[in-house]
Amino acid sequence: MTNSALTAPLILLMCLVLLLGRAAAQTAGPAAMDKVLPPDATNDGASTLVIGFVGGFVDHNDVRHSEVQLAHHLQENYGDRIKVEMFENRQKAQAHKAILEWVNKNEVQRQARIILFGHSWGASTVVYLARQLQRDRVPITLTVQVDSIRKHGEDDSIIPANVLEAINFYQTKGFVHGRAAIAAADPSRTTILGNLRFDYLREPAECRVYPWYDRLLFKGHTSIECDPQVWSQVESYIAARLPNISQTAKSQVTAALGN
Image (cartoon, rainbow, N blue to C red; front, side):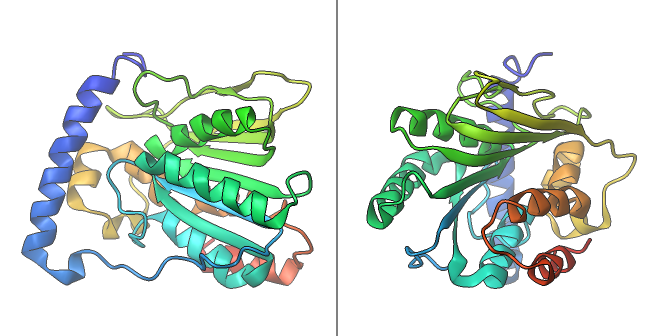
């Protein structure tokens, strides 16, 4: 079954999961969702902007999810040198507005580093947003897709020419599995760093904090999201493109992510 053919049943299944999740959260009480304040949203003077997108119907501030943990660790460890913001995948318009406002305030469009990353529907949103920013003449330093699932039939495999580098992480098992390969719209302007495949005989131990319904219905898709080896590599690709970051700071982030 193709990625495109999965879209309609996937939406229905994820809606069911959302309803189950809300019911479980109401039953379990406040401990079911561990939220913290979002990363610093006022650091407009930073030279690098990192935007992340969560997948499915995940709350942008749900710290059980690895992409949210990564965002907080990046902001905590690199401080005022970067600005990190997380969005839900349906909030592409808000993310687009935040990027344009940041670029305009700093007046550093040519020098700014903008990095986009996401999981599942959040990963495909990364590509859709990069495409929109191409029309705004805004360059992107790096895009990172983790088990990317296309939305509304829109292609998430072709990386637009305003992206300097792109990398794709994926797994192939289960009803929901990500984009196996990405390619550059213009190879002379965009370098594809790799399409990295991960296989899981069993879920990583870190998945135990994830909702039971995710682990039951989306085993492989959830396994790659909670795999610390995947997110350690994502962190490394991001950290290598941040300005004036010491090796000590990089090691601190890697250790915080559990690698």
